[in-house]
Image 1 (cartoon, rainbow, N blue to C red):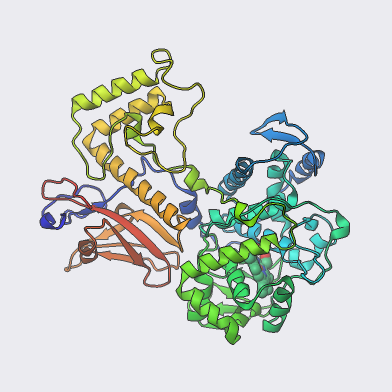
Image 2 (cartoon, rainbow, N blue to C red):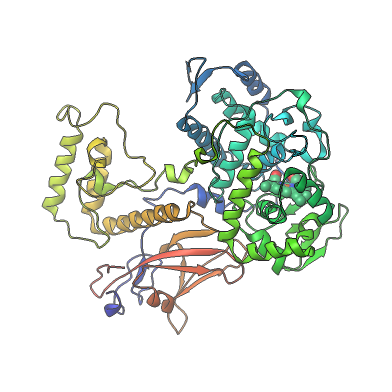
Length: 563
Ligand code: HEM
């Protein structure tokens, strides 16, 4: 039990006060790479005007894509052009590669809007799909007719060229995918990469030509209210609950004066998928903005957010409001309902040959890239939640054994030719009998780093925390399907600042995206209460965002306790 000796331990890490026995559970910058999720959370330059997409290459890309074209079968892999058969049938892994390429581009092309093309990709997927008419069976994502004027010039589609251009290099890299599949896959990818729920997706859309363009006016007009909204969405086959859930996508992105004429983001975290849109609709006071633009509303508290008449209509209408209130309170429910309805939207009017249960759930970039390499696995040593002593001899022996085992000359039979270092989505276990131990090959550098880290008590303690935090994140993802579960970041106590001036004990705090500099507050009493769990979930005092803080407890000797 950890509680017995919580008084006299010494400060172990920078953020921990000398008087406290609570200390960070895991991460150190030395070991942790920033995850896509965290990168997304940190983009907040949303006072900026809409940036111009860097689309100077678009003609070239378009040319390459046209050469590949619909039904062309050049299969380019990572820059190597290898021609596959005409009958190339992409597998789930091939689509995962497309997902990964989009996610990679999203992570790298941050010089746009609030730092992410994700929101505009979601809007592209929605506008490609939302033209569906259930009576005539026309429109919908099957066709990608927004490639052509007049549909690309429809007022509602202003600005979506940025999203289409963003995806051209991906289309050039994977010419076998149709635009219709690519645009919808990109929408699913953006939702997942920005911390939203899993969006199961399946291929099967075919591109159509200009003749299939839908007439203008099929997408909603933001200056209008409930009866118009119902006309538009009932035409697609949605009910009131589904309409409200769908519009919750306005937790992402912003309006642009040069596109719709409206201006600003709906919430404080336009690149993180949350239920904030609903909470703000319910809790904030919205007043009409005095400006030379279309009628829109501004939040009374900060004057920096906006709602359009169509957004506020969701609170005016009784039937809509019921769901707005539910989603404002219950982000799990929102995430679940949004996933279902977004999948439905992307599939409207598509004549699939595959079954619904065969949809793919793509791995997110974070799950593809565990933050920390498992040094215990590298040295084939056990890792336990409770730290165990490792003698110098043990470590040395493990180091030499690992060098021998992974040296191609000395142990030629021990490893398969082209097996790679661990990159599996779940962190490898430390069970030495695990089959994961048999197939991985480590470089001398990796083995040496592992040995040096585990041999140094200070580095090992930090590293152990790092590994534990990673595992907690992976467990969170496996439990919930997303790391940023309903806006829940998982961080280490080390990531919080510490204030020791309070007479009642130390206080840890961290700023929230809503602007409250001490939005997330953890007291020593809170940590006492949760000491046996080693983690505490804390809500922002100013908004509905949550954060999970991991920590460990030291005993008087400075040893870490079982939490
Ligand atoms: C009543 C229904 C809706 C109306 C009236 C509406 C209207 C608008 C308008 C006017 C914009 C601003 C465009 C700009 O200036 O760039 C916008 C942005 C956006 N909309 Fe909607 N929308 C609706 C439903 C939806 C749905 C169902 C989704 C997705 C499921 C969605 C996703 C988005 C996203 C992600 C953005 C931000 C785009 C960006 O940052 O570039 N919207 N919407």
